[in-house]
Each structure stands twice: as C-alpha cells, then as structure tokens.
Length: 343
Image 1: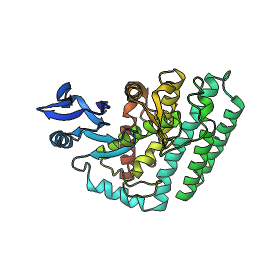
Image 2: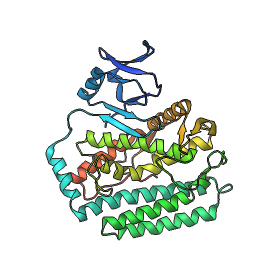
Image 3: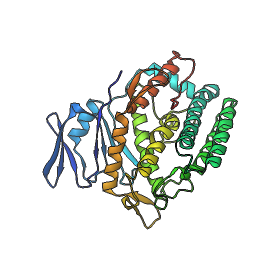
Image 4: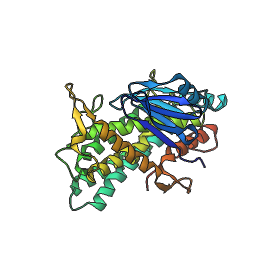
C-alpha cells in the first residue's frame, strides 16, 4: 500500500523556493528560513508571490512530485507536472468509456450515490450526536429526501438526469447545513452555497477545502495513469479536471464539510480569521490559513478502515485508493466503480 507523504504548504507571500542539492530551500528577504530534503516530500503547494526557481520546478517534475500554485483566495492557479504516467491503453479505455452514454452513467451514478450517501451520513450523525441542540425534524426531513434521491439515482439512464438528481440533493443538503453549526453562529451564518467568490466565512472555508481536495484527487488520478481532465458526469471544458471533480463529489462531505464543521464548532477557527473584500467576497487571513492547513494535514494522518478494501489506511490516502479502484474498473477488473462510503 502506498504511504502518505508530507506536503509543504508555503503561505508566506514574500517566500521564494529554490533548489540546493537535494533540498528545497525557502528564502525570505534573501535569508534561508527553511530547508527540507526533497525525498521527505510528496508535494508542494504554493500561495506565495515570489515564486519558485526553474531548477526546483525541474526537480519536482523529474521526481513526479506535485507542485501546485494557488491564488491567495485559495483558487487553483497552475500545476507543474512531469511526464505522463501510466500506459496509453488505460487512457484509451478511459476516453472510449467517456464517449459512451451507458458507461458514463455507470461511473457517474456511483459518484453521485457516494456523494448523497455521505451527505446523508453527515446529517444523520448530527441528529444522533446533537439532538438536543439541532432541529431534528428538519434534518430528518432532508435525510428522508436524500434517501429518496438515492433511489432516483439508481433509475437514471442518462447523465443529464443524474446531474439533476445531484443538483437537487446538493440543494437539499445545503438547505440545512447551517443548522449543523453549533457554536459561533453569528460569525458563521450560512444560508446557501456561494462560490466565485464565497460570500460568507463558512463558504470561504468550504471553498478552500474543495480546492485542496481537487488537486489531491487530480494528482492521485495522474499517479495511477488516468487523465483527470476527461470525466463522466462533469461536462468537458478546457482547463476543467472533470474526472477529478466527478470523484471529488463523493469525498466532499467526508473530507471538507465535516472538517469545516469541526473546526467551527470546536472554535479552532473564528470570525476574526476572515476578511471581506470590497467586491463582497470573503478571504481567510494568512494566520487562519495556516491553522486550517495544519488541521487538514492532521486529518489526513488519521487512520480508517477502507469500506471496500477492508484495510487500515491513512485518511489522506483515500483519493489514491479511489483512483486505483477507478483504474481497475476501466481496465475491466471490476464490474463497477465502488465509491467511498463513510461508515
């Protein structure tokens, strides 16, 4: 089983990354502030202005080490990748399946079923653990609606119908998501999902986590030899990692939503860690971003038993395992793609 590697997050705006032998060096004001061996890192995520030296970019590409650039808002900017991984036969199989409506429905329905099941699990867990402080009737009503949506997804024979069910389930889920905030409700008021830009603190936190999850899923897909830009449910669009977005749907509630709720309810993030721009969009401060990234990494190190493999793995390896299962399905080794279902 693949081991979970370390990720270097560079959030200091003035930081510049360079290569020194087999080490990545972080410089600030021409002084070295950090030195790390490359072999200890799995990927690097940069939110800095100064950039990265060409030598370090080349070293990352040669080692197939992920090098991702995000904007200060957390939105994806660019990735540096090396040679294409995997064999051409697997990708040709992927492209053929992506062009076949029945095959697309098979994969897309699995992803949507995983998303709805995990969303329902988030709601049911809140009812079970916090029945004294949440609107139990409203949450149970949404849970029942999501259960019906699961049945509807299984009967879909066209991708457009699946998109409709996915959109409906998402609206139902987020209609009660704000009620899962148990503390700091004034600072983390939530009425609906908003993006580009996020209009409140909780949406800003969710968007940031979704960005992190997107590039991790895309990286996992590339590692097993798949093309993250050719998907089954999300429509093809230049620059859109459609397959990564397909697979990310089932992982959003487990990876991002639950962690966001935990950080807010435990008061590990506060309203003071967010700022509103003149445009109305909300951003995290640099200090809050560091706190959130630390929590993200700690969450990835936790261990779980994968429901399909029945093996104990690090939480952060779930995208890699799911990408492997997707590749096995496309090769014909599995009858269907098994989504990750939180238990």
